[in-house]
Structures are given as structure tokens and as C-alpha cells.
Image 1 (cartoon, rainbow, N blue to C red):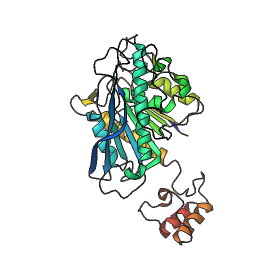
Image 2: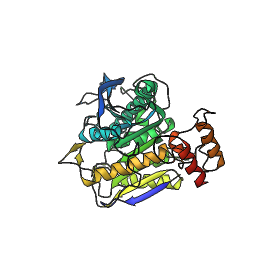
Image 3: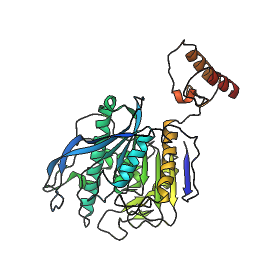
Image 4: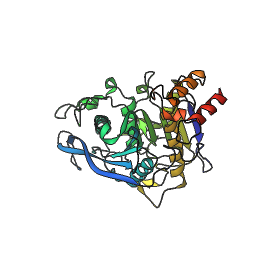
Length: 381
């Protein structure tokens, strides 16, 4: 378990060796598969007056993969765009840049579209809009797990990275249980019951909880939804002068009391910390919403200096989620000892099949498991 908090500054640098998969850009080219349909769900018209006035719409994603990658079981990052639930697109500048950057680091990257539709003067509408986005994110996770062999995805390492509204989606999917559903989602009068989180989009049956979340300037509807049973690692980035999504607690867009009261990253971090949960918080002191240089996901000019700072920190965090043990701890029991030496020796001699993550056994980082790793391991015991 590890918890970090720091104040974001231009002097921050990351601390992992060069040319490390999932940290550095080790691939030059990325293949993009556009408009993959991951589900179908009832959507609202762009301009709507009634929640029952829906039409079925395909849910689409773009999928990015590194060209020339030989790995067949890779972590996936699902990116969820901004736009306050009434605008935005998975082709937004930041989502494309993040997806390409992730694929070059060896991830499978997915940028999803989700259903939009929000009356900014209605708390009821706001809660339902968030919930539809959560259902769509669930459908995306379940689709990717069902097609994991096709896309070379490790189903135990499905991460979600949101910006603004997209972070609302990721946080609620991670921490909101079925018993936490807002009353508004059950509908009433002519408005339909939206159903359970996993009941829309497609019929694939898998856990839809992400294995880690990156929250960029998002919030959650209720802190109590994060409880002692939640063990999903969380990294957060938020500016103290954010006037769109509150840094602590408040209403979206600062004074819009018609939308639900929400709890921002600083209070989420305090909640995670009080429960002893794995979390990381980078405070953007004096910074505003989307301080990596976008407005609703589109570059206002070009990325700010903070874009790469956030990327470096987020990828470092996810790397620790992927590899939580020390190099040399071959059997992953938290201790480097002669049991690890025995595991490695038997593998090198060919007397046992590989039963461990190669990362932990490649002591000298040369991409080979051999006698030199064994010597280095023995020297460290």
C-alpha cells in the first residue's frame, strides 16, 4: 500500500530507469482501429425535454495498439473524455494524445464514446447523465474482457483514466455499489428505470470494476461510496482554483445549485487516506480546470508543461500497480530470499516451467533470464 501527496510544480521529474515498458515510449508506431462497437443503449436526443424520449444508439470506441508488439497479455487503459455530459468526443485532442502515448508505452489504449444528455438546471437530470456514462463504461470494460484474446489484453489489469466528466464516470464505476444508486436512476412517471450498472450496453458477464483509476479534475457524488471494501488504487490531479469541478466540495460550475453537490479530489483523497487505501494526489496549486492545456478536451494552443508532468506521474503510478513487488522477489511473497533463488535456478536449468512474472527475474534489465540474473540475485540475498 502506498499513499502520496505532492504539490505540482514544473520541477517534478519521475524516477524510473529509461526504456522501461509502461513507463517510456518504447514503440515508434501505433495502430488505431476506429469505431469499434462495444454496445448499444437508449440515448437522448441532443436537445431533449423528456427523459423517456430516447432512441437506440451504438456505443463506439477507438482502439490503439503498439505496432510490432509481441506481448499477448497487456494492460489496457480506457480513456473517458470531458464535456460536462452534454458535449465532448473520444476524438478530443487530449484523449487522442493520451491514447497514442499509452500505446507507445506498450499499453492497449481505448478511447470510448458514451451517452450524453444533461439539463444543467436539473439535479435529477445530472445524476441520470452520470449514471448512463457509468453504464457505458461498464459495457466497455465487459466488452474488452470478452474480447481479451482478440486484443491481447490482460483482464486483471484494466485501468480507467478520465478527464473532468470522464473522471466522474471512472470514479463512480470504481466505487459506487448497486445499493448506492441514486433514486433518480430508478425513474418515475414516464421516465424509465435505467437498470443496474452492468445491465446496459451488452450482455457480457464480467466484473466491470477497473483495477486502477486516474482521476484528472473529477469528483464523486458521495464520499461514503468509498468504503473499507474498496481496494481500487487511485491517482488524482486537481487544481486548487478549479471553477468547473470543485477541488474540495461544492457544486459544478461553482454556483450551479441546480446540479448535484459533489466531492472533489481533495476530499476523496482524505477519504481514501482515512481508510488506508492506495492513493496518490498531485495538488495543482493555483491551477484551474484542465490545466494541461485543453478546454473540453481540445488544445487551446498546445499542451502546457503540466501535460507531460501528469503523464510521467500517472504512468509511474500505474507501473507500481502492475508490478507491486521488488525486482528479485520472484515468488512475490514480499521478501527476497533463497526461495526466489531456487525458483530462478530451476527455471534457468529447465527443470520447471515459467511460473512467475519475467519482470521480477530480469535482475540486470537485459530482457534475458540467465545465469547473470542468478548471480545478481544471489549477491542481493
